[in-house]
Image 1 (tube, rainbow, N blue to C red):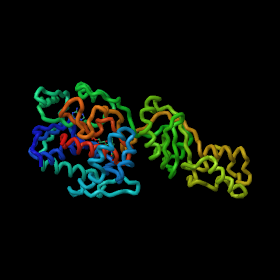
Image 2 (cartoon, rainbow, N blue to C red; image 1 turned 90 degrees about the vertical axis):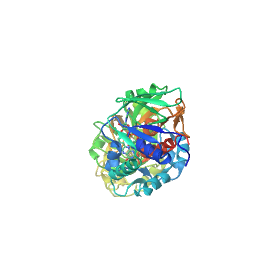
Image 3 (cartoon, rainbow, N blue to C red; image 1 turned 135 degrees about the vertical axis):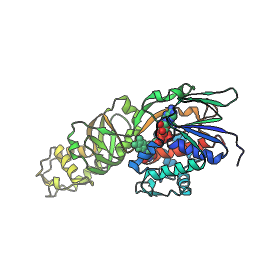
Image 4 (tube, rainbow, N blue to C red; image 1 turned 90 degrees about the horizontal axis):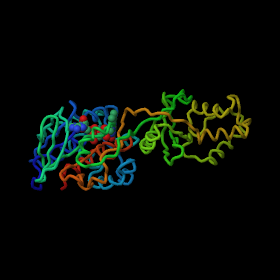
Length: 407
Ligand SMILES: Cc1cc2nc3c(=O)[nH]c(=O)nc-3n(C[C@H](O)[C@H](O)[C@H](O)COP(=O)(O)OP(=O)(O)OC[C@H]3O[C@@H](n4cnc5c(N)ncnc54)[C@H](O)[C@@H]3O)c2cc1C
């Protein structure tokens, strides 16, 4: 073990990345004095409610090239980060501390206990064992570097001197929470919500609420944003992985157009017009009622809705289907247009895009390029992932690197 260079370490924020940074710093530098300060009266509050109380710790994605694709912001920088601490390191870290993770069919990984309390208990045990001090209801207000290379931190309660500060204050919808970071000379990308569902007020499709389609392609009109995946029709509009992914990648554009946008849905997944026409042609001699013959794995109620939207009478058979009606049906199957007006927060997991600009951070160490000794990790950075455990993986990986304090 390398000699203890850093003695006084302050971690700002007792959330996911704050705990991970503090614990790993204590492991790396056992003689260091580590203090975590937390402005609220609760620690790990997001971890507790994460994944609907189950905590989606990470995602079973071991290929770094694949893994980074799940981050609309941060893709390039995370390649370097994951080369030092990735999903396998995360799984091993928890396993070494008695927390086994399990994988669900879609790749999401949860503690086998199905409870976020297991993760919290593990962090509290580790922090206690390593004598990390946790001070709640104390807010970081300003940071400065001193002539001798150390740093000072003023909080709502006192002034500290430290050899290193690890800033883990998470993502915030209001930019005022980042003011004390801006005062150090850092610039921030404006916070913008990510991971939300699309509202389609008054659209009759909402009457099909609760219905899901295994694979649909959703596209934002006049842009190149489109994603294919499961789609869920809700009381308010559309949700499900395809929509959430789209909301994350198009977060800034959708914010700029005030969540007022045209979207198109291909209910067949990724089939092209010619493929759909060929499949419909095969039905043409059939005496079966169109309404009774759902195709492309489209659920029956949705099929009925689309047939009726195409103006096809409910008692019509395939034999009786006219060319115009056939074309309308094809259009509604592959290019069904809706008007998004507003968004709804995805309660299971929502994040903020925006934060400390990535070109101001050295990703080998997570150290600020502006203030030596100041490190950033987690959602305070302009990095965010899609739903599925990717946001925590960013928190664990960046926090682990920061915890090594440049070593
Ligand atoms: C409802 C919900 C569910 C989620 N579920 C999942 C999931 O299952 N899987 C997943 O990967 N991601 C999930 N996320 C996202 C994930 O929780 C965050 O990406 C992650 O918590 C970020 O970690 P962090 O340490 O950067 O920030 P946080 O965990 O938010 O911690 C930041 C801490 O800093 C404190 N703080 C802020 N400012 C100051 C200050 N000035 N001084 C002192 N303390 C301060 C805050 O009070 C907070 O405790 C979810 C998010 C939400 C909202």
